[in-house]
Image (tube, rainbow, N blue to C red; front, side, top):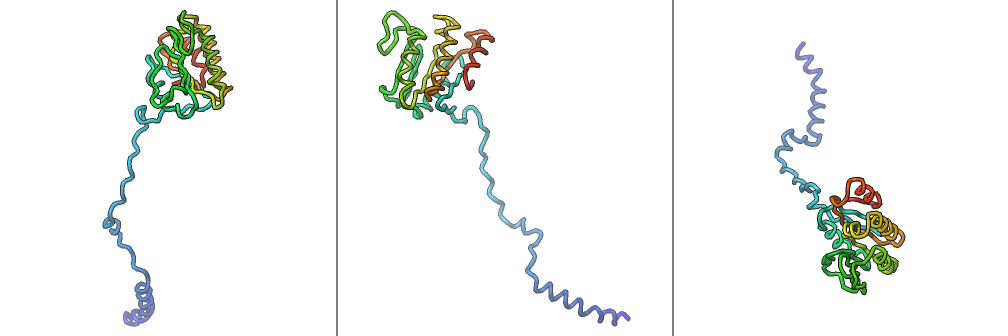
Length: 205
């Protein structure tokens, strides 16, 4: 009986053996252990203030940088000068801008005799500054306007005059395709006035 049962299943076993011989070889389960490891993907690192690119200023944009002394704003200024045909600087101590030709730069000094033909009697007023900024901002391509003298203007004139001047600057940048970059020490005003000033800008850092 065992022999008869074995003979009955013999044809099935032969067919299974034939199929196993003709089938493609199977990859051993331990084959992955023999393969060399895939190269590790490079670590991009975290984006920090030190590695992040400088803020990009677009035409019509206004940016207020909160800092005790002009530093980050000057870095942003230097990184964006190539995007505009001219630069106007309103400052007590105008920063250096390497690579910018003097005929593409207008310095308006406050806290002393104004440049570019200003009166020797004293600093430029916000109204005089506004008048001198019209030509560079309204010229084709607009201008990049940098200001770090709001504290002085608020003290020398008044807070309301300074805030009105800022609103004019923001509007002028929007309407002429210029850009406005301001460095401001928030310690110079109380919290309510700082908030009032910040609301005038499109971006605050």
